[in-house]
Length: 221
Length: 221
DNA sequence: TTCCTCAGATTGTTAGACAAGAATGCACGA
DNA sequence: TCGTGCATTCTTGTCTAACAATCTGAGGAA
Image (cartoon, rainbow over all chains, first blue to last red; front, side, top):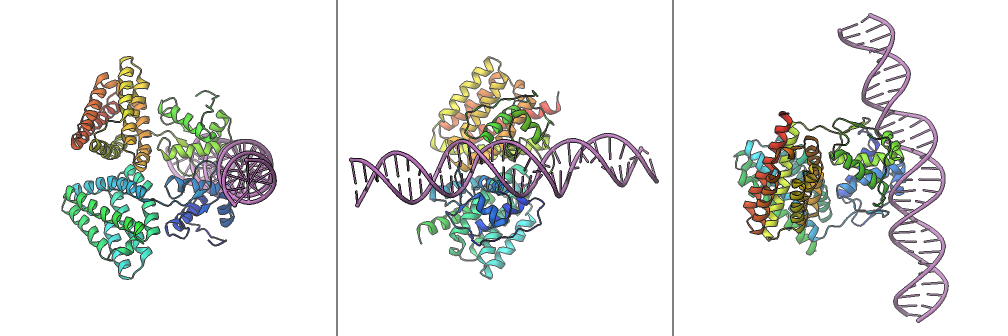
């Protein structure tokens, strides 16, 4: 990690900016698995007060991007197989409900379609990081399009860990570049046709494949 | 609200104790809808520092028990019909997944059975507050018994609002005391028989009834 | 009446400090 | 040599005090 860091001044709150900066560094793998993040270290690097760093760490901990218990230093977690399965079980629960609800309306969310295009570009250009980013955006768009604030918040609670794990294991590199896009397309098609159960099935298949790719990376190489 | 307050010294962290104390006062209706909670006020009442009060408020806000935006005072929210529907939609998503998973094992969670007994006692003795408490405990036990940490965390994210709303509208008073217990029993029975879809259906019916009771209270009297 | 300005109230952030819990390494004994 | 126990050190939890930024509401001007 570099000894200096700058914050974008976009967000109104300093804590927000700090949180967002650290979040990106974690999910991109810039801060690796097992790395310790102390409050003073972050405060020094970003030139903020310790309470500010503390607040950012607490928010990251709430989203599962850091682990810490009382009086102990926050650590970037390493998810083992059992936790990845738990993560995908929870994810499946939310996203299945989302695509079913979307299919009931028959409208394909514009943001999801846009993310789909971004995935294809990223896959073509071999931009792995963008590909992960766009994949997360696709799934996030599906959930957000339902319009349920609470479903969206629950999804936020777990999608960060998905992002983290994908970045760590770089599972997408295992998939043929177009595989993910095809699986996504099947989901969108079912939504457009208003077939709730088909949409849920395609989503379930896609997530099972994604989980399989992650787990094989975990045990394989 | 009284001008003084004491904290139980059980939890290791002062913030934890403060958070828990305020949480109880909110869900019990002791702090009513629309009430403003400023940081200094809480800090003064509980005799803690303002940053400590701030941390507790932030945790309550994350669980939906308070609402606040930047530079504005935290307020106990009032859920309108649309939000109650959204809340129950999200709740349904999680709890359906939970009871389906439980039915797949065929084991009735001991904690849920215990809560069920507590509900019957509370209903018999007309202890409304205990009844609500036990109802929340029942549903929480169902989700916890699945053993998925993330599903449990997502449920925690919304069950607080359910508790808050039930306390505010006192919807259980509308139900014949044994109605809730019977609906719960049907869910447990389906779980024991290993019938996932029946368990999900009974749960859906129960939650629809509960939502209906809340909404009729909202518009009716 | 309506809009604007300003003062008070509230939150965001910082600095410095002390206490309590956790982790580390070293010395001592078996 | 190896393991145990203690003490140092690091880190976090909490507090006090203060200033800056923002919001709210009241009062005055058009």
